Length: 210
Ligand SMILES: *[C@@H]1O[C@H](CO)[C@@H](O)[C@H](O)[C@H]1NC(C)=O
Ligand SMILES: *[C@@H]1O[C@H](CO)[C@@H](O)[C@H](O)[C@H]1NC(C)=O
Ligand SMILES: *[C@@H]1O[C@H](CO)[C@@H](O)[C@H](O)[C@H]1NC(C)=O
Image (cartoon, rainbow, N blue to C red; front, side):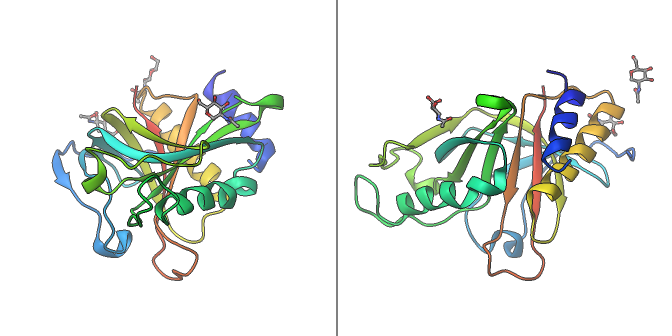
């Protein structure tokens, strides 16, 4: 499936590029964006006014998945399974700190009737990377991601499905316009705030570089 077809399909769910100097620097997100929580470290490889290209090293996550037509229909169900894992529903009966962001991989058209597969992830705190505590719920698994380069577009507000799709479309348009190659079978949403943050909310869409 081509990306433009995907965007067309996504249009049924809802549904500019500025030259930038190449930079390489170890980067960090502000304490405010991450609320002082641990988050995966990255290096910025390129940046324009509209997006940045980040290099992430290998990372470890706890995850759970489902299939759905609409992301907003299943996010609270997925979130609560992961929240139970960090709230002692794990083999060591240990409370595990929350991290940022909540990253959801969305694979287009994997389910029946072109439903998407949604895989929600909380990053494991660094202290657990060497020996992650096993989940007790079989719907919850530990995942290791290899290093990857990700194009990121950031936006504010209370992000609903339509906002993620709108920003995904803009990011893919920018990358296509620059002839950058990227994975078009899936993308990620990354949310940094709980429901009780009312100002300076930060959301991202991620597209993996090919
Ligand atoms: C960085 O992005 C700009 C804008 O699209 C592009 O012209 C440039 O080639 C990119 N540089 C690298 C190193 O990818
Ligand atoms: C969740 O992921 C597992 C492993 O990839 C897969 O076997 C299962 O079918 C998925 N469940 C749903 C509901 O997509
Ligand atoms: C992208 O590739 C097309 C076809 O090869 C070319 O015509 C166009 O000039 C390229 N655009 C950029 C921004 O490099």
